Image: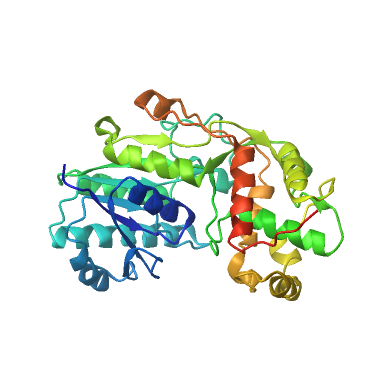
Length: 351
């Protein structure tokens, strides 16, 4: 068989990086694309909002057989966000078409926001892939509209994967919940206070879920090579659910910290003065990133820790289609924290 050639857009992020690593383990030729290079990969550096430069850069990707699209350009204005991200995808597909890339399949990533949770909706759970859409704009809807239009006149098809909160060990990604938890815990330790969940009491006790980055990467490989997956959308999670009330205790035990009752914070405000303390910790422990603002997305933590409804995806569809891997979410988070310690993103403390 001819070696498949992957183009992974957004490979500096949690999803894209794990996917690129997994595809390489599977023997694929892997090329990454984004604003920055990715260490140890053939990388195309490009701003996807610029159609001309995107097309020019893709001359080197004319052998691409599979596109894995994990790029994201967030914006507080949902209409701007939707239009910008749809445009970025369109520019990439146009560029691949211009160089006559032998594209077979596109794998794109969505999220639980497709169900309207970011708008304050109490999402009916477990959420199913065929649940009705909400009133746009929504970046995932806008991107899928582009894919449907292009795939309708192309020889390739696409698969949409819908993870939820992705747990991984990428450093500097604002949507890395493991870094939010780990940095918050180490600042608590440095201040000599117990580890208190920084969200609401109600959020502490809701049923929620994770998607491990490694599991999602393996699902991505499956989605790329499984014929019957073409044209389908799949929820992808670890397959279990948990309450932060229990998980927070596990974090405390794993890191050797006492846990006390929640105190709801707005992390973007409350952690704004912690930069000097983190810089001291980074110097003391030889950490790779002394700038807390570059390391952690506190706004993402605020969203996760203040979600006061159950967040559960129905994953039976992807199981029926043949991908049945599951993972213990506690092991997923503790494993990510341990790897972040090994990579010197978090201190390793003997207790």
